[in-house]
Image (tube, rainbow, N blue to C red; front, side, top):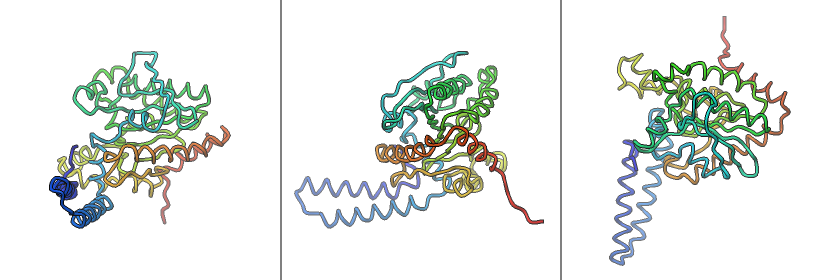
Length: 318
């Protein structure tokens, strides 16, 4: 597994613990006291590391290649997933899968950004950066959800929309802008979950929702820390400072009331335990859907409108 720099102290203790266990088993020695001491030390070290993460460290966890991706959540938290393809204009976009699924006993439409874990899969998924047809496909699926009165679950995990020449030729800015307008008017509940990276308009293109929630170690920002550092400090080495200043991680965004909830991850991050992460994810979605699905359409739309109207308000003393 990919090891982040700040995870190394815990990894070294874990390696020593494995050696102790192996020695105890191989030589039939009673090392239970030493093992228990080492386990306590490991738990304390992990707690010290993960309870005091900096914004930059959370960004690194958000990008971890072993985190659950969109289709991992679909397989672990949903069932009976039926993927749909194509935007009915250009073609399909493998970086934005979506379709019908069941969350418990509730029918819904789930869609989102999908990354890859190796070069072959990343090329297929375009590194999680969707083309215009991905956003148009996602809107087509949302309109189907509206037609059949199904809630929509949008899973956000992208460094940003694809900035290539082909995407510009097929009008990616218009595709995202159109989604922003149409999502505001959808007559069915919408929940957006930032599961990893939430980068710029690429994230916002499926992020207009009644509830915007984030995984504990995700980030959501108008630009990456490296991009911000390159603009303000003229070098990407200042990315940790930029991450701190930008208030892009879940605890900060919750305080600013830009998101509605934070889904806790297991100690060490979602990449250490996919099953436990999916359980927290499923419970959070069910809680929000229970409330949203009980609202009448007019109230749902009014609350969505008011939610976004409040962004950017501030008080000043003359």
